[in-house]
Image (cartoon, rainbow, N blue to C red; front, top):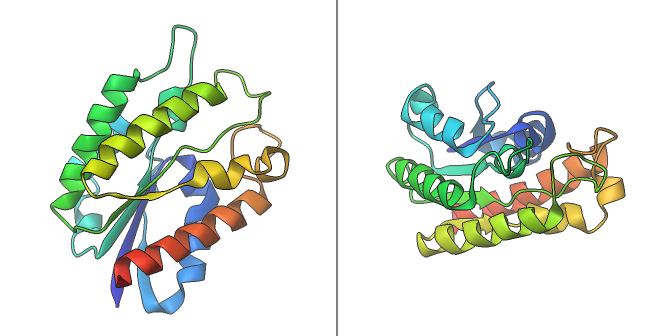
Length: 184
């Protein structure tokens, strides 16, 4: 049985994570921390410390970070773009110590009504992440495009998290990419 580890922020924790595990079924052991991966530096700390036992024996690791990082809390993005990319690369390199099959999911868009978030900033951060992680051979799961196809239907009433429809679409795409990558 292949072990799949899902890491990421609340889009994974209360979003696609559990449903993805259901879609993968009994053919895979799918595990994820009970903790929200929040921003990329928090996830870096997790993979260096608390989550190490979870990562042991992983055949594939799927992760996302970004919603916290791109959020402007009043003085610019929580994590500036250069720091975001550098820390994504650090996380990817740590994860490489466990498996060479790593998938990164792009940051999902929010409703235009969500404070602190800007679609163009999210696009810039995603572009930089895809370029940097692509150079390392990380597979990209473009959840941004999945959600952006119909933001009103795919984002919940809180303007940030996935709606039930968004969860289903993101979980289905994530499960498909995991299957192709781990078995390819």
